[in-house]
Image (cartoon, rainbow, N blue to C red):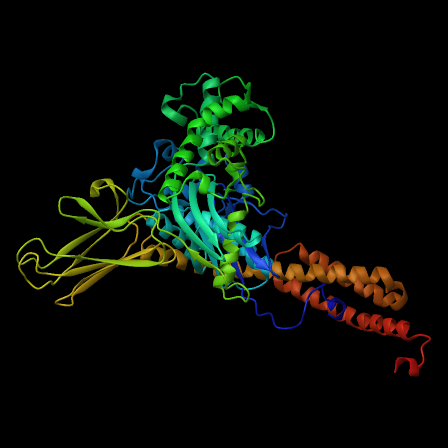
Amino acid sequence: MALLSIAEPGQSSAPHQHRLAIGIDLGTTNSLVASVRNGSTITLDDAQGRSLLPSVVRYLNTGDIDVGYAARNAQTDDPYNTLASVKRLMGRARADLPDETARAYRLSEETPNQLRIDTRAGAKTPIEVAAEILKTLRNRAEQALGGELVGAVITVPAYFDDAQRQATKDAARLAGLNVLRLLNEPTAAAVAYGLDHASEGVYAIYDLGGGTFDISILRLSRGVFEVLSVNGDAALGGDDFDARICTWLMQQAGLDTADGPDVISATDHRRLLQQSRAAKEALTAADSTVIEIRIEGRTPLAVSLDHATFDTLSADLIGKTLVSTRKAVRDAGLKTQDIQGVVLVGGSTRMPAVRCAVADFFQCKPLTDLDPDQVVALGAAIQANALAGNRGADDMLLLDVTPLSLGLEVMGGLVEKIIPRNSTLPLARAQDFTTFKDGQTALALHVLQGERELASECRSLARFELRNIPPMAAGAARIRVTFQIDADGLLCVSAHEQRSGVEAAVTVQPSYGLSEQEIVRMLQESQAHAQDDARARALQEQRVEAERALEATQAALAIDGDVLLDAEERAAIDAAMATLHHTLTGFDAANIRTATAALNRLTTPYAARRMDHAVRGALSGQHIQELG
C-alpha cells in the first residue's frame, strides 16, 4: 500500500546485477555462512543475531528435525537421536573410526562398507546429517540475501582425502546447493587475511577446529595465494581435548576408564562431554573452573580443574599438531625463520596453551585480527563472490595443492606415484605402462592414495579395467594412464592403449559414500516435501509483509491519525488491524494475505491525505515566483 512506500536508506529501484553467492564453513562443532554485501564480507546471522550454528542434528518423535542450538541442548536427554561432530564421519567406513568415536553412536551393521547411524528416523548416513546442517545455512542465506543463490563455496580441511571431499559435495547437493568449489580451510583463511590486509610473504595457517587439524604454508603475492605445503590430522581437534577432560572427570569419580565411555550410560557420557567442553572454554579466560560430576547411581562430586592440570592432560595433543607443523615447514623447503607470520584459525586456537605453543614454535606472535571462528567462512565468501562473476572480484588466483600422493598399484603390490603430494591444483599427469604377460588383453588398475610404498598400506580409491587390448607380446602394449584433479581436489583417472585406441576411465567415487541411486532417491524424497517447504516459506513471507503493514500503519496513526481520519474511518482501520493481528496467530497464508490486503485498501486514502497534507505544509506561505 502507499503507506509502505518509504525506502530504506541506501536502497535503489535500479535493477540489482549482483549475483548472490555464499561461503560455508561446515565445521565439526559449529558451522557458518558468509557473503559479500555492498563490498563488505560478513557472516549471516540467524533471527537471534547468532552467526554460529552448532553442527548438531536431532531426529524427533514427530518426524521433525532440529538443527543447531535446540538440537545441541537435547544431546544429554536424547543422545542416540542427536548427532554431533558428524564431520569426523564423512567419507569414512566403520573400520576407519577409532573405537571411542564409534561408541558415541549406534552404528548400523547392515552395510559395513558404508557408515550408517541408527536413529528413530531410520539409519542415516553422515552425508544426510551434514545435508541438514547445510540446508539450514542455505535457508538462512536466502532469507538474509533476499534472492536465489548462484552457488556456494564450501570449505574442507586441507587433509581431507578424496572420499571425504566427495562426501561433502554429496551433502551439499542433497541440501540443494550448487557447489562452485570446495576450498581448503587454511586457504580460505589466507584469502580473508590476504585481501583484508594486503599481506605479502610466506605465512603459516594453523587451523585447529573442533574435529580436524590442518597446517598450510602459503606464499601470498599480488593476489596470488600459492599453497607450498600442507599437513595435518583429520581426526584431531577440540573434541579430543574435551575427551581428555571427560576421561579425567571419570577418573575423579572413581570409574575405571579402561573400557572407555561404555562404563557409564550414553546420557551421562554426553553430559560429561558437554561439561568438559564448557570447562575447556572457561579456562580460556580463567585460571580454574569447578565442574560438578553427576553420574547416575553415584553421589554428585564437585572438582576443580586448573590450567596446569588441563595443560598436562592435553600436552601430547598440542605436540601432535607441532609434529605436523614441522613436517609442513620442511616440505615447503623452508625454516621457521622464513615464515613471516602465523594465522590462527578455528575455535580451538583460543586455548592459551595452543597460542603459547605456536608462538614458541615460530618465535613470533600469531595473528588473531579476525575472529578464528569466522575467518574461514569469510574467506570462502570472498572466493564465492569471485566465482559468481561479480565485478571487482576477479583479481584473485588460488593455487591449492593435493594433500596426499596419488598413484597405481604395480606388480608386487607396490605403489607407483603419479601425482606427488603438494602438487598444485588443478593438474593432469600421465605415465605410460605396459602388459606383463604375452597375449594379455586386459589390465586391472587400482588407484591408491597415500605415502607408503606398499599398496596394502595406502588408501584404496577405485578399481577399474581396461579391456579389449589386442593380444601382443609382453611389454609391447603402450598404455597411457592419466590422472586429472579438478580445483575441488576430485580425481578422474583414464587409461588409453595408444596402438589400438581402446580406453577406459573412472571418476573416483568413495566406496562408502553415496551411490548415484541413493543421491537420486534422497533428492526425490526432498522434492516430495517441496510443497510443504513452499507452503512454510509462503506463510513466513506473508507474516513478514503483514507485520510491516501493521508497524507502518501504527506509526502513521500515532502521528496524525486523529487529525486526518474521522471516527468511522479510524474504527474501520483499527478493526482491520485487529483482524490482521488475529490471523497472524494462525497458519493460513491465504488468510493473512487477505487480511493484509483489506488493511491496505482501507489505508490507501489515508496515505493520500498524508501526502497532500505534507505537500500543503511544505508550500504554505510561498509564492509562485519563489517556487519557479
